[in-house]
Amino acid sequence: MLFESVLTTVAFALCASARAVPNPVEVFKRAHTVGTVISKCSKPGVLALAYDDGPYQYTSSLVDTLNAAGVKGTFFLTGTLYGCIYNQRAAVKKAFDSGHQVASHTWTHPHMGSMGTAQIQSEMEKVEQAFVNIFGKKPQYMRPPYLETGGQFLNVMRTMNYTVITDDVDAGDWNNQSPQQSEQKFQQAGAGGNGHIPLMHETYQGTVTTLTSWLINWAKTNNLQIVTVAECLDDAEGAYKPGIFEGNGQTTC
Image (cartoon, rainbow, N blue to C red):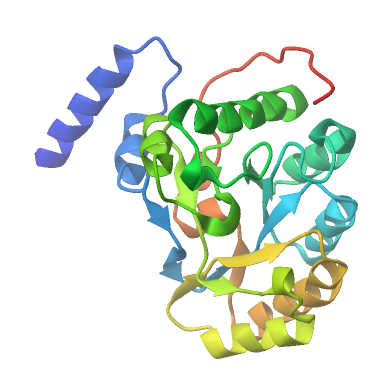
């Protein structure tokens, strides 16, 4: 009865809004995650391969590797960190069309914890518009640069209805760790318990080739299903914001 009452209240409030809204059941299901920090999957038996800082020169080949293995990954993309996202629009659309999750890593990869509300919103909205222009969707998920969540950041994420992801295993590729050293971190973390959401970067060739191939084999050996971050949180249908969005014709940053 309480559940039905809550759903009725949520549905009424959403219908009163002019914005496109999700199914109230889905809202209820993930309401506890919006604007809070999630570092691990909500269930065992899965592994969510998650890559930051793209798009980059390796994006397309990484998609090929994941596709060949029959697994899905999550790409946390920026707008301008390594060149303009529109210069890699084919690779971005390829990732989306292949069923991988495409999520936000902000427009310029700034220190969000020291930014004001309007600046944070701008960082997110520019990525949203680029995604709409490239593949027609706005992301529901984001990972903050440097994993920084202080200041006004989480308040803004709540207002903008974002699911905030960090990690529970740091591959350390950003810190000059070799793929072999990264592999040891996963072995130490183990395959038991709720699934891992690792911090990895698609801008390192060793991560894209050696580490990713090793993780695919490691997951199979340990009977883990490789899924998107949304899937590992039982939110497979909630990877993107609901609604139909129009592109603005922008092709440059």
